[in-house]
Length: 488
Image (cartoon, rainbow, N blue to C red; front, side, top):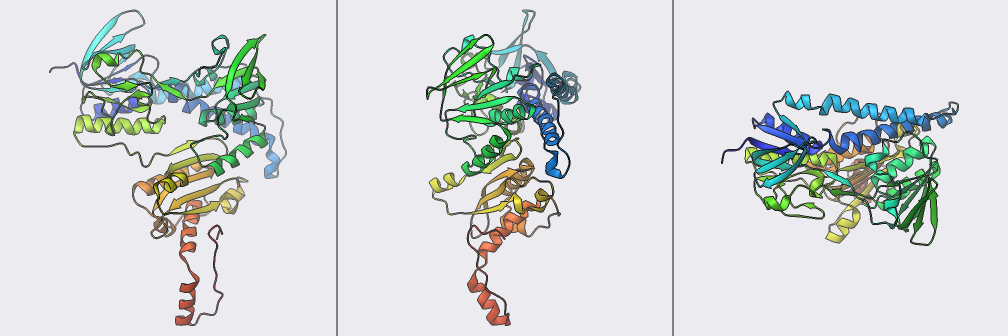
């Protein structure tokens, strides 16, 4: 059939921008449809503003705790409105430098503004704000419609002025008290940021710990750090009822207790933007979790692909980019390409940061996989010591015989960068032995990666081998033996 475009991309967030850019670079006539501003959640309500706010809060914290570095603690008067203006300016700068329509129009991508929905499996309607509607047809269609904050069914919520990450960064007045429902990455990051800026923060979650997708021992250490900074927790207690009177919000929990606050942030996850796409009209399968796709990002219609948050599979910007590459490679190059589900890293950008990739110990135990766990603490890492950033550790699960890495977690300064090293190593078959044999610069945080690899070498060493060497060569030193948790 003859169509208007080789590729139609629905959504101009991280996944859509990547898909459109790759498609046009492969010579495909492409249009991209976005209902709001290009850049999506990451630029406007997610990664960019949250990390900018975390940085501002870190500067305040460092000034107030300067005595940690032999300086004098400095009082800081936080201009909250000024901080939020800075946050919004940074995201505007990112938009203008990377996401503005003219950048993609210069690549000959036709950028359309409006709400998109399917007319049939090859035809998409674009409804504009002025009420007009346009229809375009495409040989291939890539749905990258993203997700929205999940609003849980809490009694009384509709009568309360609650916040989500969509509205949080529009605040100009700092709340004296902030209750956060949800102890996942968003809730944890914002708890630290607002506490450091001077807000009294309490985090509520029905789970008994924070960051339930990360290693329990590391999240416990992080929680202790945050509590020392002033964050309060009510865990194992769901928010069941809320009410607002005279500006104050009351949250009632399942254990019968109440929390009074000035602002309420819902950080309870995200839900795929499938409503309004008219997926049934196009014969595209979906559920409440999102559009159903296979490992090649194909939907039930072979020429229609879906990527990123709208699939409900991964809610990371980097996975949206990865899935976009997979989808376009399959659609336009006809080269079989699959989602790399085995090497998906994630990071929570608190201080200290917490990152993970691969399997947890519980996963390996459940699968019956034989492994050993190797640790290296930040308080023995010279660069961390010089910077007073000794909270945390590097933990790696690997095979004892070859040092093949099965999973890694890092709690500590620059964990996001260090977990990238383990991700590359796992994807390319680089073992702990290879890492241990590689020269690392000193003093750097990356040296911690080599030091945890050294622990594999230490555990491989046996007293029997040492005694053989002494017998053969006449060596007279001690025969050292190390316990499984001993750090060398």
